Image (cartoon, rainbow, N blue to C red; front, side, top):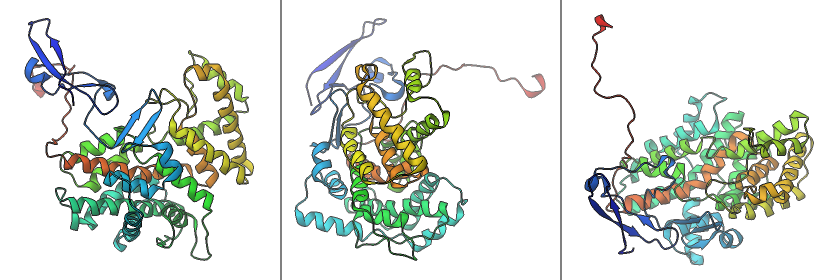
Length: 434
């Protein structure tokens, strides 16, 4: 932290206040405005929190201008190439690289928590058969507090650790069962002899009547997707988890709140929007170029989904990493009919965006949502499960962010202020005089 200050002068009164200027490890300096209201009687106004740091954190660093993403200081490129999702979970939770034995012990602990309480199985039957899997996720994850309340003291570090393990382990089971319930298929119990991603694919796609062997390439692609989405700084869902948790709410409730926020089409639903756009392009009978031209027309509200990013003003580093395995996967898999047409359209659209000066000059590159929507499509995962899997990946980020917040002895309940623009001092008119 820095001893620098910024001086704010109130033109109306001439009063001055010096606000601390904080220097992070990396990234823009930050003005500490916590005393601004006390000193000058002013709030700040920042819709969407475009220029506001809501917390201090040592978990994830993101530089949108340079296209940098790091977990606990480790570049996402190195983690994607050399690590696994469960090792990334260990790094995020423990703020260090594990030894070989530490990782083995951690994986075993996670594996031993994959089963759900049997009564939770009956909980699913309370949903309509056509319920959206994300609706089921919100309900079932929130209900975990009713089944695992033996370690719910949020001030106890060991309780927080066990809760984190339970969430990491049980979310894939909850997610897979959400899909199975919606499809009318029997629930498949976890198989602890499989890896984390193999187990999820097995619970998603296997049947009791025959042996299922998860494709190693699919498991590898899914593991990469989970790594790339493990955390992403203070996005809408993470901020929601922190805000819900700041009241002292249990971690299961806080994570359920994060899942609800992620469900929004402007957040986790962007990948589904990519596939729907590709479907619309194919069903229109019009040329791909006509849609590209519409995207370039400033008077046309149409835009290409899966291109550009609110934070990354350079190439999304996650997109670079996932593009490679996306092409590898599509090259090795045989697709037919509608799926093949969608994939061909996606690849043609990618080529346009990477070569057209209009997109290149505006940094409208394909983002991570563009690629992993295609991967899920190729894997046979239905669109209503896309965001479910993203919530599975992000659970470790949410619980780590929650843990960081409640571990801070100075944390307070979140209470944003507002710019009030409504009427004041109205006289109430009795009913018989209206």
